Length: 434
Image (cartoon, rainbow, N blue to C red):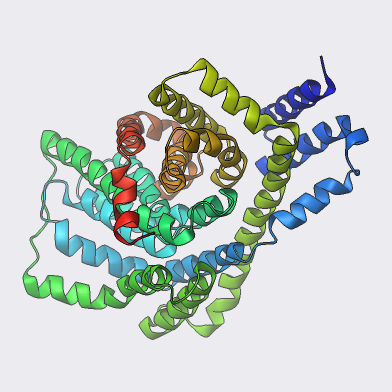
């Protein structure tokens, strides 16, 4: 057995062993990469290679957008924007069967899109909607399931931090602007699919309808939420029109959200230090994940793992649909135990050459891989949204899993549609010439 094969075995065995021992993902990636590198020390400049790759991995102007979008999301969460979006959503759909569940979904879509964070959407919307839904007779398990799955739409509807990470991992073959535009229809489709299942539950269980809002009330709530919604137009519109880059847009989002929160009066200047500290902590975690993931991705490339996997898939599965299905299954499994950021950075260089060889556009694959991993963060054992949603609803994870299963099956069905119907992702980028 060659030293290269042994090195690959050590890499994967040590990584999965550390995960099973509940070592944080970033440390698991870094330690596994270092152990594998030690076996190839005669072919490497030394252990300083790891530090170099970690440093150069985040030496990217595009990545500056992530800390600013994180800060913008934290400001929006504290600045009263969630309540305004919820009231606007309620005025539109509360009168339908299962209306409050629709409000939960629509508000999560809007807040997730504006903040760019599924966790922010789950905590901000869930903390408000769970109690309101319980008062109307909805089980807390249903509220949590709706909140968990609907919050993932914000990772597809721009601006989205994970789409920026994918743009980096794709090596420039997919632009941030094209990915942002491509995420709209898949994100909306996912939200409507969840609404459809909620309608079925509401009608079969006989959940009550809310009061129908008058046009005057709808206009009032829209006017109050208008400047919050306008942020989407400013940020995404500016990027697509070429007025500013994604990084510059993230700074504009911070300034816009800060001014808006001060005008609304839900935040004071004295609140900003605590928001900055919270954002800094989140940014540190994300950036450390990116550092170690980029080092492991480089090691994969050095060992020729992407070429090996590409050759294996293309030779063993001669049908492109079978290959796409196999890649989806692998990513679904990966998403259950790995955070989205390292998963995108590690597996994009592996699978992107395979799918592009078979004719899939890099932008289309970006939406597919992100939706795959969206399902993963809703499932145990690592599912971030599962734990956040359960915590916000104040119920145990074990009670949520069973009612969550039909929602996850629905997400998988939407994933299959998006995987095999590229027009869903590519229609808007093609229309805008991106």
